[in-house]
Image (cartoon, rainbow, N blue to C red; front, side, top):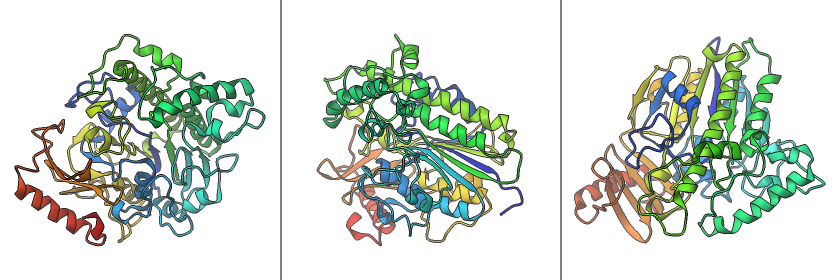
Length: 453
C-alpha cells in the first residue's frame, strides 16, 4: 500500500437504469430529461463507462458477486433468499479493513438474506465479518414498518420511525400496505408521493447516516476510509417525497417500448425520475461534506447501481430479465488518477469495481477473482461479458451481440445491439454460426459449472 492511500466513496443506489441521468442523451429508449446535477458534475469531473453490465439483474446476487469478485456462476448467492457465509467469504471490504481502512456501510447493502432481522442500530455480527467497522444497514424501504411497531420504533430500518412518532409510523404502514399487493402482481398504482418528507425518507436516512460517519471521523489525517452508501432508491415502490415529485409536474417522458395497458406510464416515470433526483440531492450533500473535510482531492468516488429498471419497456417492470434496461448499469469514477471528462465504451462488469478499489488502495487483486481492475486503474477491457440469473438463465455479450439462454421458454435468443439496441429482432434462427460461436464462449466461461452452459 502507498504511504497515502485514497479514501474510497462508493455511491450505490438500487435499481437505477443506465440511461436515466441528465448527462445521458444518447439512449435508444429516448432522452429521459432527468434532473441529476450532482451526478452530472461527477461524470464531467471523471470517467464514465457506457458499457457496464451487472453480473446478475437481482439485488442480492449482484451485490454478493461484487463483494467477492466472482461471476454469478461461481457465487453461492443465487437469489434474494441466499446469503454468503459471513465467516468464510473473502470480500473486498474485509481486505480493505485488514489493510487499515475504516470501513462503513449505510443503507440497503443486501449482504444479508432477505427477512433476517438486524441489530437495532443497523449493526450485526455478520456485517462485521463481511469487513465493516461501522454500519447502518437497512433492509430496503419496507423494513421500517414491517419489523417495528408504533411503540417500539427502530432506527435501523430508516424512515421516520427513528423519531419515535407513532403517527408517522402509521402513515408509513398504511402507505406500504396500499402499495404491496400491486407490486407483488408486477402492477403499479397511480403514482403518489411518500407520506414523509425528504429527511425522513429511506434515502434521506441512508444519506444522513453516511454524513454522520463523516462527521464523527477526524479529517485531515492519513487514516483512510471506505464509505459504501447503498441508497434504497430509486428501487420501487415509486414513493418520492412530495417536494421532489412536484418538480416533474407536467414533464413528459419517452413512452415505454411495447408497454402494457394497465398503467399510467407517464405518471410512474415522473415518480421514478423524482426518486432519482432525490437520491442525486443527497449525493450532492455527501460530496459537499467530503469537500468540506478538505478530502476531495484524495477521495476516489465510484457511482454505480446493482441493476436497472424496466419501467414498462417490453411490457415489463423492475428487473430480473435480460433486456438492457434491466442489465445495463451506470458506472462513473472520479478522483485521484482518473481522467477528467472521459467517456469510455470498454466492456466492463459490475464486479470490476472491487479490484479497482483494491488497486487504488495499493493492494493486490486475488488470483481467484473473475473481476479485474477497470482500465482507469491498469486493467484491460473484456472481450465478453457474462451475466446470470438462476441456473438456467444466462447471457453472454461481445462488443456487438448478446446471446440469451433459457429466457421465456426459448433455448436461445440473439440480438445485434448495434443495429437493434431496443432488442426487437431475434436473430437466433438466421445467424446459427454466431449463435454457435457465442455458445462456445459461454461454455468456456462456465466450464466449472456445466449446468449453466
